Image (cartoon, rainbow, N blue to C red; front, side, top):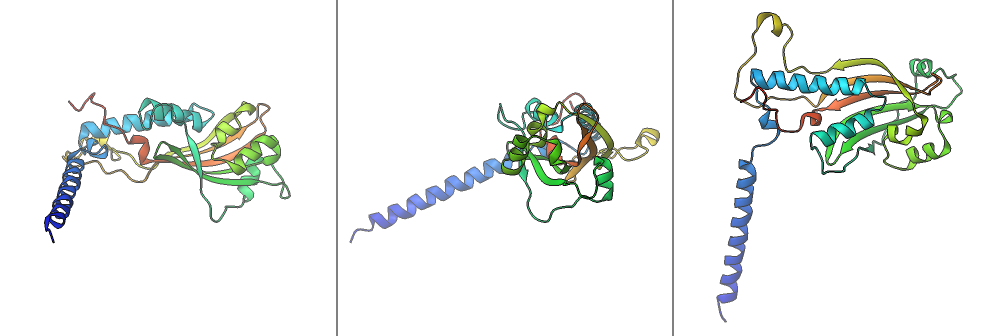
Length: 236
């Protein structure tokens, strides 16, 4: 019996292992996008500027969906042409409490629907949102789309030409510590800037053109909104 087949199989296996190992090393050596946001004064200032730019964009738009569409495209967070889709999150719902009903100006007997989603562009989850809305204020087609598809809420109800009243906007994380502008001290390190899972939280009320509220939501924006190479305005 010839030993050639066994030897050939071993050589092929070793070659395949070498290819896999070299690929893993190459991937490990590529700088990750997160690592480009360094823990330096320049990177921290840049991160805060970018975060506040996103904050302003969201606050000045009626629909977070369309604001995130533009953000995702401008920062190349997904392949060209990608749009925000809503990954529905199952599990225990959150019934509307008295405060929600007051915001939506509905009585205790009127139906309020609840939808929790992750807004995704490409493979990045940009935000998680809790949304309470009044189905009676929407068309049958809108309710059907919201109940059966991954369409984002803002896109589903776009035809209502709604307005948005911002109830609160909160930075959950700041790259610069409180009082940095007075004492001038910012840590200077060469490590990566560590980002928490959520960076911004917005609470808002959506209204029909006549001012009737039909949806209230809580939006939590993730660290993936900064998942692109650091600007080079100050870093060079």
